[in-house]
Length: 164
Image 1 (tube, rainbow, N blue to C red):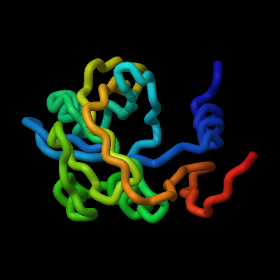
Image 2: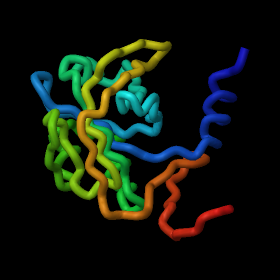
Image 3: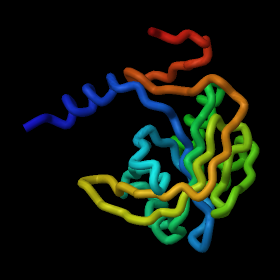
């Protein structure tokens, strides 16, 4: 059996984009920082988002049934830290400039990408809920640089270097 420590240490070696996941609806406005986001299929356009079920507002995301995946730019590590902090929901949303697309979930206006989604299925696996999310609308920002997370630190992909 693989230990939790070995698993977490191995996962830390995977480079991931950094996102702020938000929701708004009958259960209120909430948001958290996530790296466990990936595409599932392009027909229909679908993402999966993983969220710890022990987060105090997990049930609010379930009740709202919608979310926005705000992919952060290279200059937005402060927002990642804010939405991973113990601040309450209102205090978190005091940072950044927010709008909305179709679902009403908060969209960070200067995010690299905003994926506005309807949650179509939820599967609980261990400590996390896996949200299957159909993308209803997309907004692409102007930045060329993404904020990434690797080896438990933030990194920027904004130097324009590509590898063959």
